[in-house]
Length: 551
Image 1 (cartoon, helix red, strand yellow):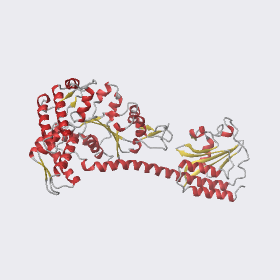
Image 2 (image 1 turned 90 degrees about the vertical axis):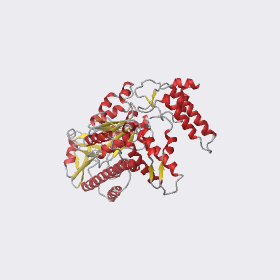
Image 3 (image 1 turned 60 degrees about the vertical axis):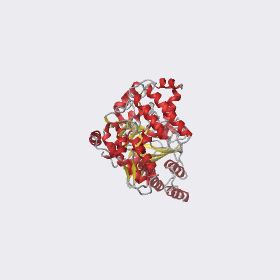
Image 4 (image 1 turned 120 degrees about the vertical axis):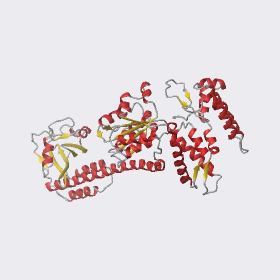
């Protein structure tokens, strides 16, 4: 019997290897290399138990095709015998049972019924079967002199190695997932100071009722609304009131996903799937498993990725880039967009079947101008947030300031209101002693609210942008020129105004008048100014006369 010091050294090396921090695949390969010092095999496989199937995780002397196969007990009686046995099993060289690795030995590739020596050990931990070790040799007497006790000890260590490796690998995956979740939670903590739905208007009250109704279900929600209305707050409110509230809400900005990486970001990838894929990486769907995935700006999602998202929604299954393995995920999806998806479908930019899968329960977030009664409450809230962030004394809006804020069209909605309040509070506080009350007046707001902003017409389908005034605001053709002339005078009235300030003010006034004189026709406005239409569009946007890109 073969049982010497070299064998015990090998077992000691295997035991020590269990505590190493190398990858699971590396540890499995090192285990087979160590065992070959005491078991003279030509080929061997270390396989993990999945139900009633053995899946090879490492091999020696076998073709790559062997690792790609799955070995069901019902098809491979030798493997079933090995896994049911309590001791190592040696098969007679003349056994009639087919060998699962016939034709797969690198040294004898393609040949069948040529493996003459075969042994196997069930790998158990605390009595539970976790896998199997199989070894084959062309020499029929190769395993005759091996001590059964050595095989049993090697199997026990191999089983412990496999279980330990699986636990370490699972912990690593969990740590990676928690790390990705932590990034989103850090983002949540940064949003927390302003992450509230403020308002008591009928529109907001109705929206809250809709949120409470849909939150308790697992229905997919599509949130629509203009830029800055608070779609993300609505998504977080839905998640917070759902049964998944104690699980992560994972945020993805689809507009920030390059087309080449969008699929990997959502569904993950395996090592070597593409240039730069140095390791396996879970996608957002895996990270959000059992929780909620929020896809913001869903209208920006590349058309090439939309079919895979549709399958994930329909089947609850995803596939990492570069992998043929299907993973099941339990994810509640919330999507948001400021685009007209029906129009996007007509233009071939969005799939109709995906839209219907997303639009199970639509939530429309109202514009700020449609709930003007909430503006004073929002102003008070943002003034208090600004006070705390800037370290100021009390910050209060005067009555004339509230009147000005209540009548402004707010094309940027709540986000624009917040930004205006922060800017005005900062500027107003510069002339107030530290700790003294900061009172916001209409004069503080006038420079911020003097520049009219025209909205793109959502009904327009052509390439020429059609602009229209916000509903409920004065006719720009009669009111804009006067407002801009007054604003320009006030902007540059100070003695410290530079020549550049004066020129910019005059430039803005003339361009605003041309746009107001040719409503909805930027090309005609450009001709009246002797400018190229594209140059006018760029300059008007830079001067704040047109919405910023993406709004």
